[in-house]
Image (cartoon, rainbow, N blue to C red; front, top):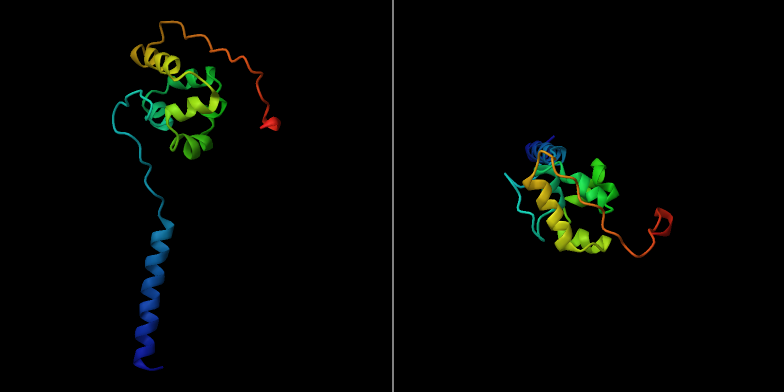
Length: 128
C-alpha cells in the first residue's frame, strides 16, 4: 500500500474515533441554578426541580403527567408556566398565587388550595 493510502486510513480512523466520542456523550442537563422566580416565563422543569412540593399543585390543576419522569425530561424542560396554563385552560394568576404560597411555606403547615373548577367536562386520553 502506498504512503498516501496509509495517511488517508489514519485520517479516517481519527475522524471515526472523534465522531464516535461526540455521539457517545450525553448532553449535560441544563437547569436553573438556585431558586427560580415563579413567573410566566419560568420553565415547568426548573420550578419542580427547585421546589419539589409544587408537584402537588400541578397535579391539583390537572397536570397529570407531572410525576412522569419521561414527561419531565421531554415536555417540562421546554414549556413555560404560562404555556402550561394555556394548555389546561387554567387562570395563570391563580395558579401562580398557589405556587407562590407553597414556595413561601415549604413546611406544608397551611392547607393546600382547592382545585380550580373547569366548567367543561374532562377529556379522556382517547378523546384527545
